[in-house]
Amino acid sequence: MATKIGIIGAGGMLQYHITGFRQAGAEVVALADVALPAAQAAAKTWGVANAYGSPAEMLEACPDIDAVSIIVPNKFHAPLSIEMLKAGKHVFCEKPPALSAAEVEEMIAVAEKADKKLMFNFNNRARPESVALKGYIDGGTVGTINSAQAKWIRRTGIPGFGGWFTNKELSGGGPLIDLLHMIDLSLYFMGFPEPAVVLGRIYDDFINDKGFKGPWGIPDREGVVNTVEAAAHGFVTFKDGQSLSLQVSWAEMIKREEVSVTFQGTQAGGKIERLFGRDGLDDTAIDSCELYVQENGCSVNRDIVTPECEDMGRINSAANFVDAIEGKAEPLNTPDQALKLMKIIDAIYASAASGKAVEL
Image (cartoon, rainbow, N blue to C red):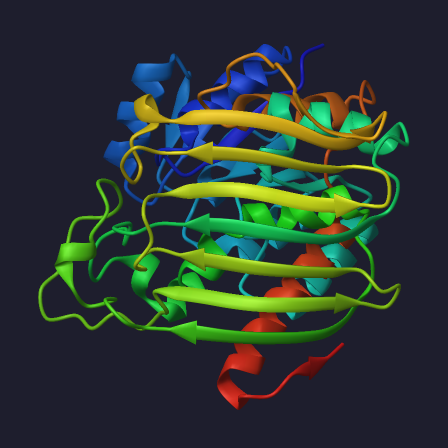
């Protein structure tokens, strides 16, 4: 019998969740959104039988749902995940996992008590390029990764003015928490070592300048001051000697949008990268995946050819959730990994606020 899934939230990520779930053989039986017309419209578009105005209504009407996907503003990730887990449902939640590490710890405790899967949409782990590089890492080609550099940088990428993205109470922060994918991917490649010391700085230049608005996001609201950063930089050391530097921005004086992880290992280095001609326009993107090795006294750069993946792994990530709860595949991410990631995010914000390094 197919796994039955309900989805909370009718936003842009819905298309990838539904496609991935169906790809894995699951049945999407219901959609819920506080804006009922949005849920009804999405249900009609995607051929979902039921639409509701709240998660509670969905659970009451469809008690046989096995799992729930959560696509809502960041503030509601933890409370909705906890509510669904307590109701006995597996949970697949959009990133970030929550607003803080403390919230993730509470989510983990509830998931363990309910004996249900809790997974997050760290979709870049499911990109063909990431899968290929992880294969080389796991196969011993790279050796130990000593250091890595994570970037998701934009020049004109603020997602609207006055919406939930730029309201710290609703989002938890700006690009650092919104575009944390490359930090996560770096940690994934490195084997999620234990963080030791974190130093961070954030910058709010341009955050109220509409000239730095991106081509997506939420419609502007007048008279609202943005309360999040425009850019964040940080450096993380780990207890085993590894290190990670990071640069994340919505609005920063760089050439163009870059999404990348570069790493240096004891036997080889590597890089996964997506470059955009303009911020946020996928049809101009150039993807690359490389390994750097020394062979026969020569420096050799290997281009790794992988299938094109315009959705950056989102569909495969959703499919993995279904396969994981059905016992057909190992989960691409775990709650403990999400907790380590959020501890680093929290520490970067804390370091930026205090001006001092934070020990973990």
